[in-house]
Length: 431
Ligand code: HEC
Ligand code: HEC
Image (cartoon, rainbow, N blue to C red; front, side, top):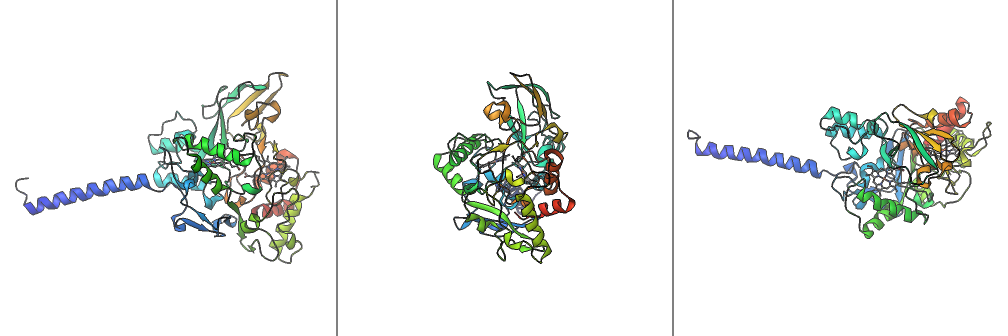
């Protein structure tokens, strides 16, 4: 040090301070980086009907409040894990989140983004100390965008679990693992009272009570925070229930609310919850434009009785939303052993009274009620804004809308020609 000139000494000190300072700033920046994945280009607000690209064209959200405020409590992380509601429910992806975005977030942060939390690891006991370890531990999130839910089998249920095959080695006869896609947090005013895939948030007191109950649970659960103030919960529920999302445009077709058609989120926001057939594209029936005509044919197929004497609209029967008007849940064999992919657990349930057994990858409503007949039942979700949020079904087993239709053909008795399947997919993509 003695041979250094005072000037050099000051220079070194400045350099050291600068390096330390930027390191500290970087650490702070990374820590305080907005946890929402929503693009910063929206600058705090999403305009009503603002187009957002997805693989099927563009979707948009319409808020009854005039625009979508992206700065409210839904977007703030209240807990210790830097997660907000918008960590998993993002406007660009129909208020769900896709595996492609999860993979990008993983790559950008080496798997340190708050969405990668042991709460949703394949098995919470897995090592997450290196990038490779994290990639392995979050394989379900990365591969199909499913989050780990479940818990103890309901006490006093009519059934018991007698065998478990969990490829990730965590589930057992006392611990159900149920892999679930984030449901879109939209279209509630015309939606069903069932909240969550298994209606697990319901208290028998209606939709708002269920949304409040769920938000309360999430604050101390997925967000790892303290109990939420009632005003906070109210504001979050007010926010969710002001949002309508739907596909806005399709390439080669243009706006889905043009020339008498009623697609898009703004028209949806003015609709009432009533039972019946979809009529969004009636005005395009027989259109000289082949793509418009195809969407209208798909709508007719969806509404009508198929040659196999089955109808999509039999269950998806709330007009232009597609939930069930009677709030019913159904078993469409999405949790069946036949539909199982090798990364899902398989449970053998036994009826305590009759000794009958059934194999399922998820108990569904059956673990909420404890009833044998409710095993494998799931809520009938909104079908709007589908193109933005693949993969589909509670466990993401259908990668595309075509896979959805093929599932109904393979395991639910529907029969379609290639043309009919393509028409139906064009319609679903335009919802
Ligand atoms: C870690 C990811 C994650 C976070 C964070 C998260 N959610 Fe979810 N959300 C999910 C998943 C997964 C489901 C489906 C769960 C199920 O059905 O078992 C879901 C379901 C929902 C539903 C049910 C929608 C319906 O149609 O039934 C609502 C409402 C909801 N979330 C709101 C919120 C709110 C409000 C917050 C913040 C307080 C939040 N979520 C935070 C992943 C998340
Ligand atoms: C028996 C009632 C019933 C019938 C018939 C039915 N669905 Fe469904 N649908 C459901 C239920 C329940 C779910 C949720 C199942 C799950 O995720 O496990 C669902 C889920 C879906 C989804 C996935 C939504 C999402 O957010 O992942 C699409 C798309 C869909 N159905 C389209 C159709 C089409 C097209 C037909 C006709 C070919 C049809 N459904 C027939 C009850 C039904």
